[in-house]
Amino acid sequence: MSIAATVLDRIQRVTQLPKVSLHEPTFGGNELKYVTECIETGWVSSVGEYVNRFERELAAYTGAAHAVVVSNGTSGLQVMLELVGVRRDDEVLVPALSFVATANAVRHCGAWPHFVDSDIRSLGMDVSKLDAYLREVGEIRVDGCYNRRTGRRIAAVVPMHTFGHPVDMPALMSLAERHRLEVVEDAAESLGSWIGDRHTGTFGRCAMLSFNGNKIVTTGGGGAIITNDAVLAKRAKHLTTTAKQPHAWAFFHDEVAYNFRMPNLNAAMGCAQLERIGSFLEAKRLLALRYAEAFRDVPEVSLFLERTGTKVNYWLQTLLLAPEVASQRDEILAVTNAAGQMTRPVWELLYTLPMYGACERMTTPVADDLARRIINVPSSPQLIAGVV
Ligand SMILES: Cc1ncc(COP(=O)(O)O)c(C=O)c1O
Image (cartoon, rainbow, N blue to C red; front, side, top):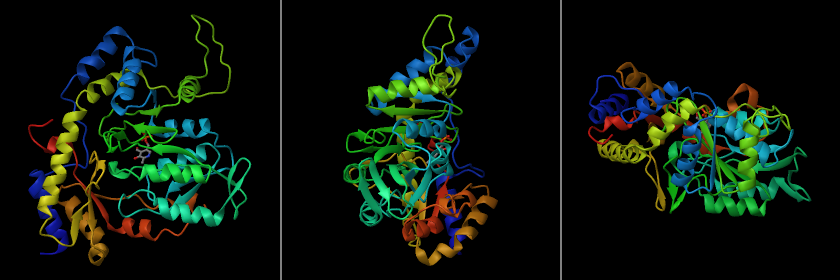
């Protein structure tokens, strides 16, 4: 059997469905009830009981002191970068292997992404390589770290927890202190992922969660800023709600700001989804075990599993092809998709995209290699009958 046929066979053994997508939301709880309540009461827009409740419940779940819900993760990331002091023509360190939004948010602030290589153990930023790199290209001045090559300030670093697998945040936090960098976590994919007893997104100054339709918990579209910094949380709420000073009837806005608040309608769905996150996570963990078992006798393919000390949400189940079959990745993708089992490669490396081709980067051999070897396979929690 060809490797493509073997991969298809193993996926079919796990999904046991003739046609299956990569990740579908599931709405079997209170979603309809809460959304209907918004429609019946008229509280569908940016004010209402559910936006406040969703914020409280996100903070409680993650252990962050504050949560501010926003229209999507990208806008949340943009606002956070602005709030930690990223300015036009600064540079921000981001992984070369990430969804395009990580870099777009940097550009929305007028700053430049500066790409970092991956760690094969986490799929996220390689912290020790970044440390060595900054010792070489970075120079500490009064207002922070500067890139000797471009003369620009490197203001922040944005670790991203790929498919829910956490970056080594304790190591990254000490690196950031040494090199005087702000840390903003892109935790879009890692709701329900932990390092020890700390939720991802609670290590840096602040973090973004995404509730896009394909995420572990969805609000249709939406995101949140989480932080332990009360001042930053207050500023985030102000800046994402048109900087309007609270008043019964007057329209006084004290700065140029954004209309980025999550509507109550979406937050209602989020509250219902969050009630069910425990069962989503349980199902995803079982699914990971089933894939691991199915591929046990296929030495060319392994399931990327959580590393010791972390608890992973298994947002997207991830196959890693052995180097000797990497050249057959596209055939595997073609065969599985043609047979109704939806699979996807990882994103194109960000520095290969036209708008980011000229940006600064370190050498990225690991990210380059991973980009050729990763395949995501069907990951919906409802693939595990009886749990969700
Ligand atoms: C790593 C990463 N960053 C940022 C985003 C952007 O989030 P959103 O789609 O909510 O804007 C996503 C997901 O969509 C993502 O996966």
